[in-house]
Length: 232
Image (tube, rainbow, N blue to C red; front, side):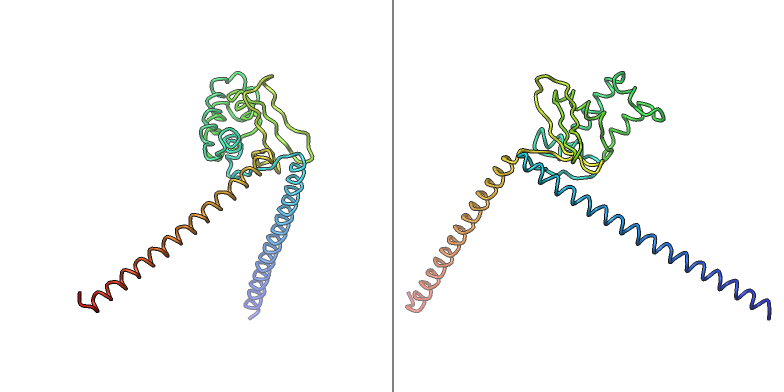
């Protein structure tokens, strides 16, 4: 009888311990979730301040997808106005780095061989950084100006007379976006309004045509009925 009680108490302690562990895990998850939500709110607030600040300078942020390709997407958007062509810029970047190993190899971390680094950088969704920005600058013969909220601008100035200036923004130490002049947005918004107005006008005209077709059809049916009635 005593053994059973001792065994029962042991099982009960084990059950209580498991329950406590579960409660602790739940509490920890809740704390992590609250911290994550707080960081997300803070990040959104910073982005809003950043956007408003840039607007006072006459610029707006054109956001690109945050899937690990954001640097190359942002550059594609700057050069072509289409972020979906990012693969081309990643490929060019990796090829340039391979062809200029003597320039880039000294800046690769010691624990990763250069060949392994460029192979990894050639993979989709692999984040690009300062080395890739330098390579893209040389490829495109462009200077880079990267705006960071409440931080000094990061500039890669390789050319006295560049073919193009690439303007980007950098967020939370992990995401790039394209930076455009506000007048471009205003022009685009105006063009969208005009397109929408034209589409609405076309729909209205099409609606009128359909009504006319229905009227014609009714007139014909009426005529057929009259003809049948007169046995002509």
